[in-house]
Image (cartoon, rainbow, N blue to C red; front, side, top):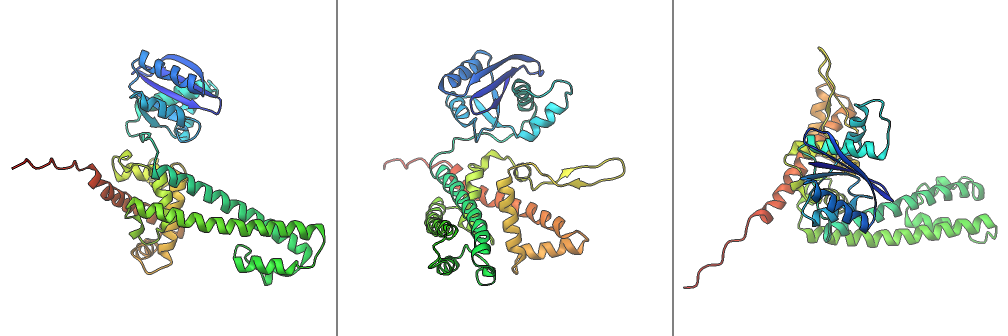
Length: 349
């Protein structure tokens, strides 16, 4: 038996199917401790060997952890696969139970879905810090855009002297421009500038904290050109356990760097993969652009692809696919010592 779970903030839609894909039972459970207990009992009653959860890193995280503690194998089902499975059966509409059945069928059919791993310790800390840092950066960007508009009213032409308000020196210069202005708009703008200064200080602290955690993890990712502590932290936080991916091809498919076959008749081609983990995909793009701008092997590879007639975007995608293999190989090598069992103690003389 296989089960699929469509997770939401308040509810869990659960469907159990047999090996032939026939629906055995469908339930709507609350997304709380009582619902998790009923879910575990349901899996035990029907002899479920594998549970697929859509959103196992969001609303389905607590349910996934409860099932893992109960000894059930849990895998992550991407929403794109659920949508395609649902679309392959027209006329049934879209409801949570329908999605749960689609997730269950994908779980039974697809053997290489990434397993859900308990994320605790340094990996969980990295993810929390990296996500919080990105929220602060987004808040600072929104404030900078708003301040630029305010300064266009208060000090027209300021953009020539202060092109980037994210720099500490420019923030102080903007405060100096508003000195002595008692208008309400100037007072609000000063508050925004002060908040940006606070964010910059917090970002510096976060960068140091993230860098220390990455160093303590012992990862070799930072030895790859273009991967600093922040990019390494994002990769570690998203991958969690590289053993979730049986091969480099599975890893490339999971991060969206592997192209999708789109051939028909005599036309043989591949198209861009817009699925996969977009956070990992963005990290690969950042690494690729960094390598292209310097005298690196990545730049030489990019130039070879351009010489073959590929466009700039196509060449970058090829480089991202190559970098995905390099990252996979590096993380596998880092994990190899941990997989080797410790030698038994020597016998006493």
